[in-house]
Length: 199
Image (cartoon, rainbow, N blue to C red; front, side):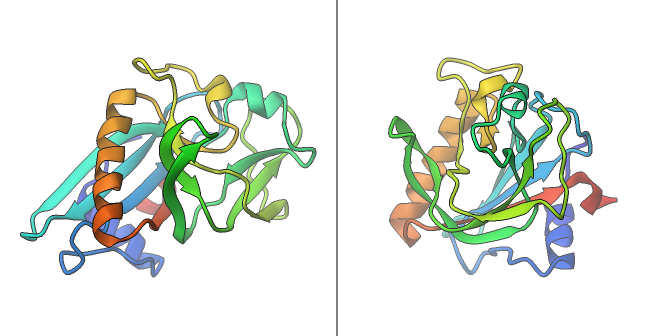
């Protein structure tokens, strides 16, 4: 998947009538996942874009390698009888807050309902059926993979969460989240787009 400019991201969000926080809202982060067109699981082949403005109106932007999909292990071994969760593309307003992922370390944790596809055929192909969507609080968090360096396959790192490949990237991301939560309150909006939104 190619990378996208800030303007391309703004344009894709505008087409969907999604909110994009501008310079009049300093330190309000735009957290945007972009899911690759591939339906094969187990790769960190998606991106998370973090775009925000400082108090001087200067734009700060980052792009991180992530997965927006469940890993192969969890697709083949669903923890939920309805199937493994795959987050539905949408804008989830104020649905995340800094908290403890599984009670272990600070991450962005789901605090309001999101929508997920349920993939229950136990293969490693990502199935996103609009007729098989569930809404609720499922612990679809935004967190890291291994705590030491980076991971090269997703496997057990995601059962539907949005997961950073490299811990160094996650540290940068969470530093921005901690600053933003102190300045503007501990609520964050996450937007999930798809690669096809840019075609």
